[in-house]
Length: 269
Image (cartoon, rainbow, N blue to C red; front, side, top):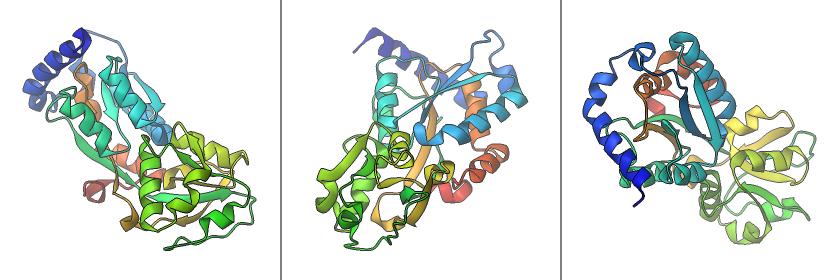
């Protein structure tokens, strides 16, 4: 166990003890002794939406937020190694569980904020048409090309994609033809740039990129629920409590919905 990780656990235990009190403190008053930004490690699929939410949070509280976007797996490993994140906003539960099992999160700070959907995309100018169903001809639709997907061995979007394709009975026909990407936004870019004829991304990613179009949505029962939890890390400064409250509040929810996410009670299932 590293010294940095031990320190994070100690601070996390202290924060956990006072967390209920911090949740009632306005973010702008919560950290009067330091002006350092609040550092948020967030899944790549949150980029545009969270940038807008962070801007609204700063306007309300005068607390600067700096977001770092990457695959949830990469970010969780960085936090485990001592990276200076105050908040972790994951695209799945497993990588949040990973940090929680290692006592690197503040007890009581975790909540499910958003839900998403998984979609099949093609380039906006592509003539491809394909409906998702058990045994659908995905391999044939690829022609000589590859299927863009986040890495199915570690990245949440890729894990969801593999689960869906396996449930639908087509994984074996395409697993050797994947264009594996380091995160879902890289997979999106492969299709947007014409480097792959088809890709699997989140619905919000398909809506965010004008150079692609959504062909169909994967059935909700073909993969685990796509839930985005957020929590404070063991080194979080006091404004993290107010920030997490803001993520679950009406102003942030309105912004997230504008970018295609599901919020409110439907996000907590």
